Length: 270
Length: 153
Image (cartoon, rainbow over all chains, first blue to last red; front, side):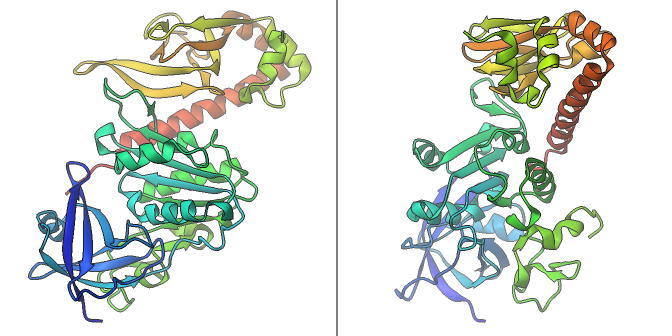
């Protein structure tokens, strides 16, 4: 699959190490379409290619990706400016089960940089609000300075049809919100555990603890979905870099039903 | 106006508690209001009670060498605060300060320990519930210590 050329329309610095790119096809054609949870391979010419989940609105005009500068490619990517051109291959991977969750309460749990891959779900749900029961977004970060999409979170919190709680692991003197891990928000969150669907994205340790807390609350493991993003390189299941037990994350994931990967997530050597 | 036993019965911590045990416990209970910014207790003080939060929110605080007073956890309606009353030497490991006007029900430690000693079934039920609180706090601390959101680039 040959990368398509996309021009950077806008770069937004979200936090000290996390940024958002808004992209448009250089050709002027319509942008590629995607489902919430899918990812694209973004190619910085002369540097390399990385898998990044789409963080934008599935019906928006631009293709939006949010990522953190953690390696060589994303550090170079963080220096892109409006007008620069990159390559895009995609979309790849299994999406979040937004159709399956229709008619049910929905619990979205994001940790740190795990919020961007879930943001398209929130856009979709809010655009089709009548299709879902109660919708709860629980978001945990390290510090208040690490909160992503702050203005948007404040807008969402003002809505009467979305329950949003944010917590930080480490408070600061100027922070007046919740302090504590994201799992501590689950016991009191308003959803019907017997039928709710849960979607979790964040570091694997956080996913594991969150899934356990949801199970404790009574959510079935077949209703819990997680996004695992492990060393994806080729995005089509050929190279084997993302192998996770019997699964190739890039092809079968990144979104998995938790009952398919539960045993693997609890083993540290996988 | 609700009795203390009725108030306790509505709190999640005492869900499915028997009416007899609630009545027993209510003899140790008193409702308290805490103004915003006031400490319910401070680190190092004798733990004379534990609390269930009815309304408002509480910051669990620790004094650290470099940052001074820091909030390590926030608790709100439906939470239970404090287990230092249960283990010797019965001194608070952390402080607790109201983040807004807050209403709690305080349970006198010596009174509850006495009833636990007298009624082993009641005592077991209390220990079982506090074991869950302690396990949850331990799990949360474990997760916080791992600093899972840190950028290690």
